[in-house]
Amino acid sequence: MADTSTQSIRVEASPAAVMSVIADFAAYPSWAASVKRCQVVAAGPDGRAERVRFLVENGPVKDDYELAYVWTGDDAVEWSLVRGQMQKAQQGSYRLRGDAGGTEVVYSLAIEPAIPMLGLLKRKVQKVILDTALKELKKHVEARGA
Image (cartoon, rainbow, N blue to C red; front, top):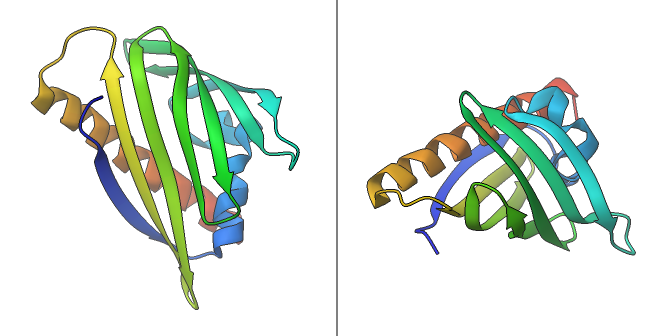
């Protein structure tokens, strides 16, 4: 597995409000720029997604992949790659820590591309993905007034 990259951002909303946005996969194409289609393939007994299929486009890079999710209430969610076209492996997580003023969102991600890539380039790609995802998440959650 590739090296894990981790970043965090502060969101002015409760952990429950942040996690509700993370768990609402049907809405991803409306706020996550690279996600063109997102479909829950299987849901767990709590109604949250256990498997989700993504179609993403970021410039010339396109991928169709499926992730398996494990939820820990409104505190954390972890995922791993089930199948993908451009990836051999992916592991990631969101961890949420709330306080009186909002929530710190910690996003960790490790991606192993299907094609060989220098470690430095992989880390840069992961950093761009994390940075973009966190900023888009923050903007969407705070715009909802949650």
